[in-house]
Figure 1 (cartoon, helix red, strand yellow):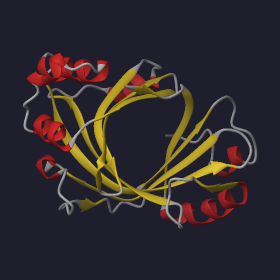
Figure 2: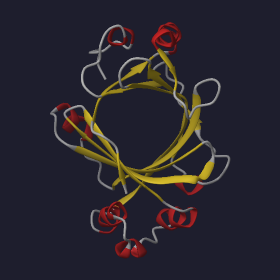
Figure 3: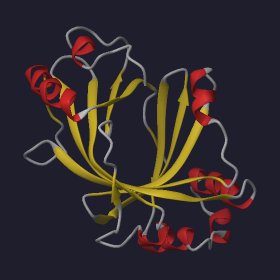
Length: 214
């Protein structure tokens, strides 16, 4: 199990019209993250899990309460990058915990064959087993998208912009190379996330619209 550092996060939706000038200005102060392609992008596919009974997670976030999100994700259509993840959010600070899993393990979880997880040596796998078996977590939906990832030339700042977002509730197709997902057609379909260690400084603060509604 790997744990990332706890970081501040600013998140909001942006329109396609906002994105073009914002991206142009961002490129003046950032560079492509090293794991991206020549256009600064990479592909992400995620299947999310949650309780059968939906809870008011957004309201809890707004009240500053701790929330946790479990999901399985892989990158650039490569199943060797599969990982089980837990994202914990508290008072706009985010920590990601993750562990690699195999294709066979992922398929077993999707098929609700998870008794083997109780004996795992990995703490996150055992924790997720409790969510599946006791809290009755189920698959919710699949999000398939490209992500632009930029890093600040000064300071520890990561800017991510989710684009080409598609979704489907056919979670059984999660591992298929091609997936029948529906594009999100709204004008607010780009998701901007900025992660930073301490304080987000100008001019990035101004460019990303820090303080605007999530």
